[in-house]
Image 1 (cartoon, rainbow, N blue to C red):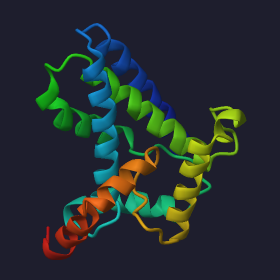
Image 2 (image 1 turned 180 degrees about the vertical axis):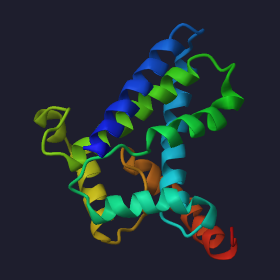
Image 3 (image 1 turned 90 degrees about the horizontal axis):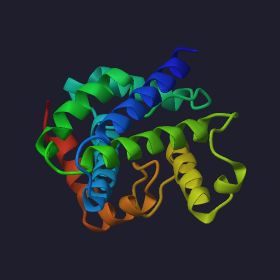
Image 4 (image 1 turned 120 degrees about the horizontal axis):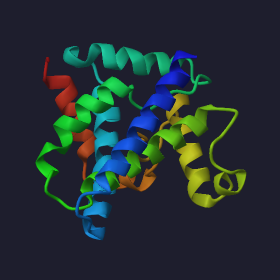
Length: 185
């Protein structure tokens, strides 16, 4: 039940912040940039912090390890406390980019709802949506990730498998592995 409360708190906080950000100046390019940035952050947090042995992120990694051991328990992608701290830190450089916050929080809500639906029997989104090619790809990638099935590319993104493919082609995954192996932090 605690995980469900965390999910609802995360979604409520994200919706509130997304709503508040609508009162700032808005541009479509800023909105799209915020969406892309949120997905990039998701990829790096999942790949670098949740799956590599950095000592400074041990508690965060342990929470994610618990999720892998108990995948039938839906939970938010990030606990609300990490979300707030991370968002303030990661969004500070973009405070003056119109629409960026709205896009970021919109994508964050989407990421959490998708992840919740992937692990829940009671989905938020309709079966029609989950039967589309894109959502079937998301579901397959996430299931492969939890089962440790290797693919041609990493599966660190919940909502954007294309980002996984692009980062693999750019060899970001190799850099990720090198950093995790050589930095003893």
